[in-house]
Image 1 (cartoon, rainbow, N blue to C red):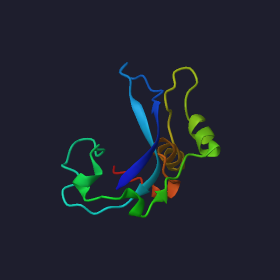
Image 2 (cartoon, rainbow, N blue to C red; image 1 turned 45 degrees about the horizontal axis):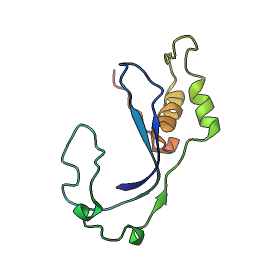
Image 3 (cartoon, rainbow, N blue to C red; image 1 turned 60 degrees about the horizontal axis):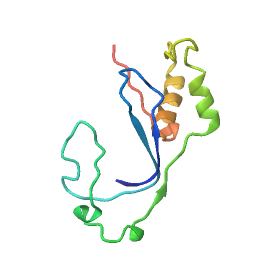
Image 4 (cartoon, helix red, strand yellow; image 1 turned 135 degrees about the vertical axis):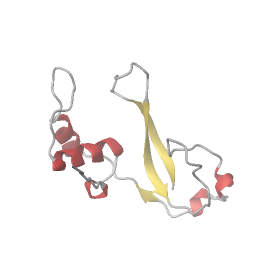
Length: 116
């Protein structure tokens, strides 16, 4: 998959006092390229498109990225403890909503497995 960057925003999390950023994509296109991801810890990779055999990005089939809606953002924020910003105990549906908002994907794209 390749994506068109919509914006880069500073993360509001300050767990380790290191500045972290979220890259928000506006659109994505699926490509097939052997060994496009070399197995790094982070599956995001920045490169020249020609390395992936893409000469004309406008010739690809682009799909809109699902963006978090205000309703989802509000639902996610309601699971945080006001004093510390710590997420408390969650139900599976609440976790699904929070993950969808954080990842910028629809809730239907989130699958949660619990093993005891």
